[in-house]
Image (cartoon, rainbow, N blue to C red; front, side):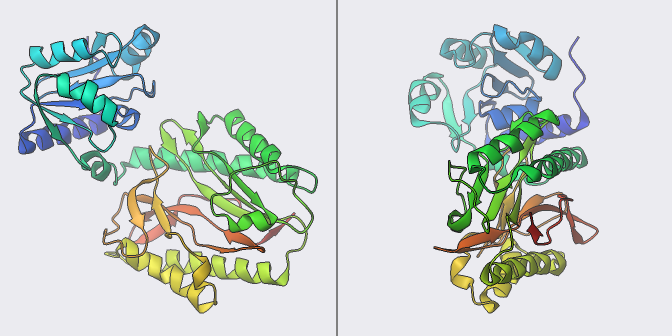
Length: 364
């Protein structure tokens, strides 16, 4: 007997089928791991392909995942075989009478398109950003899982901070942090952990190196936990010993910019409006040239989802979206500061989904 589909998944599949009907698509092939998970719940990331039609749901995967697929995606017909078996998919497309097949053109590599999709013996139709826009607004259950991932990551940071001291390398700090996240239940890090100390703090995405942390260094720690299919993302900048007056000033400006954006949100605001609030604080502080990235981005199944909170963004921020607020200042040959929390919109305000540790200046 097929497993009963959850209400959330039922709504997603209904939305897909409506989109298909409106677009003249009678079969949709889904093979990006993010959207396979989004539609079916299957977490054998990268090893399954879905075929959705008006009347059927199929998941193709191999013997490594039969039991898992039946447990997680039992409302889908399990088709046993390699997820990229062209003949298997051709047979399903023919069986279901699909004449026009939709495909994830934003995720498909050219060689896969040329050697797989064009040989399905059906008219192909790209679906563009359909899934990206569908995933912008999270269900309460999804927000709860993001929040759980944030709580887990925050606790891991608390356990890691005592190891951030002179003589320890950035790589050692990253390894300890990732160990603590896994120990607390994370499936994996959300992305490659960023540890940038001293002058390397001027690199917004300075992934951990063998650099030794020295007394007086600022240490930017940007990391996240992937937990039950959802990411967290947070950044804290801490200081190993008393920071210089300049770095202390920069920290105060970044903190003020983040608080101004969170407190300044009003219903109906666009991503660009919120970015401007934080950016104006940094510009007024004299560091406008040293804040080169957007204020934030969506977070969910992917670490970067389609909720741009950046200069010029026309996207209206609405309840159910989860996104980062992460102003930063990065000064070459000095260092940098970034503070990042995830937020969601509730009761007309931004609520911090990331709860701890403190965003106050921390001297270890």
